[in-house]
Image (cartoon, rainbow, N blue to C red; front, top):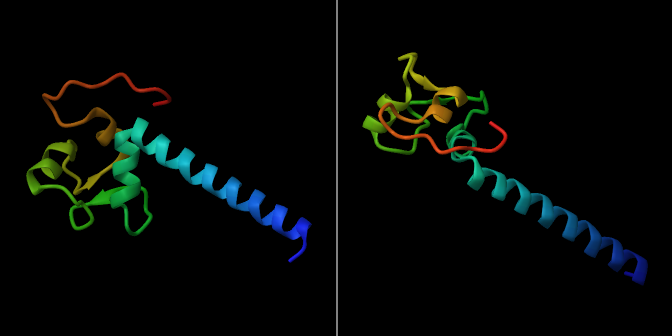
Length: 90
């Protein structure tokens, strides 16, 4: 591999690393989005009871409309009775 190929490989690797780091940071700053992305195994944008990785009673508290899924809007509000943190880019 020549110098140009090596430089291009390093640039691609750096860009990919920065992209992954940015996505990880966004998930940390927005825990509900991180939970949805982490637990939504079928990619439908909601977390079903079978996908949820937390305790069953937490699922019941987060599923405020009782439809059997946790939507992003429900996750953003958090369980009833829990104070909400101010979040950027809701």
